Image 1 (cartoon, rainbow, N blue to C red):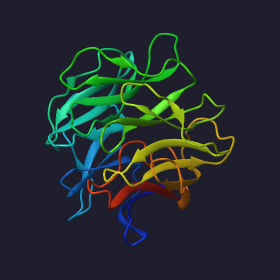
Image 2: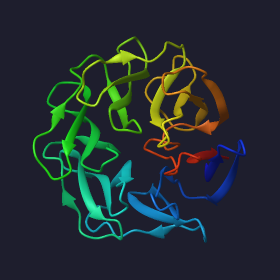
Image 3: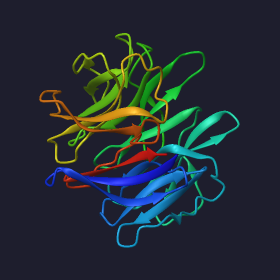
Image 4: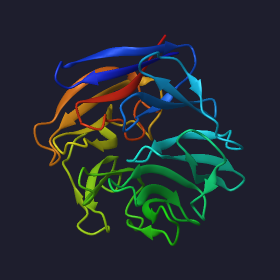
Length: 273
């Protein structure tokens, strides 16, 4: 499968291709300055300058087993990445220009998923001991992690709301993966809406007006790659939802925050034969 890195323009109501490559690229982030995207491929991270789209390797030091859980801090100075070591994925921080990783997560496995808008905290999915996958947060300065979900099904894909007061995530506690939302301290957990589709990776827009998620066909287990999927868009309360795009995708399409800083566009990857 070939990778097509694309941008959906909210005002124009259409997408445009930024880069097509035979490499398997995944999980685009949009830099806060708006000048480049970041993706992962084959265990490494790459920047894609929008003025001259191509895969530019990012120096991640010893972190050569990076997965698709990565993102750029709101001030554009730091990158969080998930790198696999002996005990599973751990979360590291590097300068945005690249450099030696500094470990942040003290336990594994931990998969990064979002920065708080003020850049002070991260949210991530993690498995601890024999428990399933739950949602956690941690101060970027270091310290103890806070567990927000308590094993009520498999929880994943957390992302902060525009103002940072809430965290959206997907959870299968109702039978299959659906979109849930809670206060940033874990209180007030609620199912956003019910649907037969399997829904993953909710991403609120920075402008506070929209929420997008990845929709798999009913009955899909997990979040596999190379399936017929859709990107749904809706209001942050789940109302007015509709299918925006349908294509071949899934794992790698939009695992992590992918909006432009003004909320006027988002990035995604589709896969073609």
